[in-house]
Length: 78
Image (cartoon, rainbow, N blue to C red; front, side, top):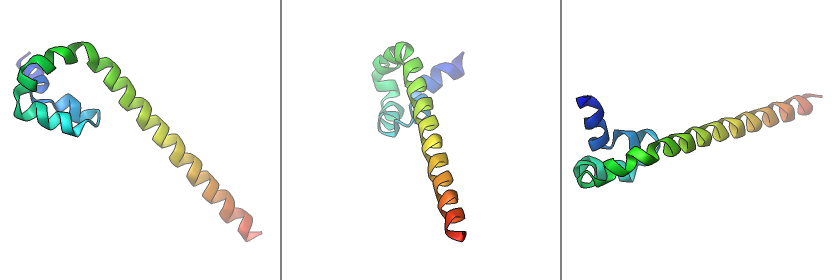
């Protein structure tokens, strides 16, 4: 339980979801004076969902670009 409290106060969950600025703020202000840590109890689920969706979209775009490049290379050989 102590570890969970430290992670929230240190803002490590914000680094995970890509919010480096607010993660640093939490780290140096003890979870934005504990107020931010309390508010994150209610918003962390949606932040993680959004970060995961962005990662999936990036993977889809990268796959599309790779497939297009492979198709162009194959058509240029013909």
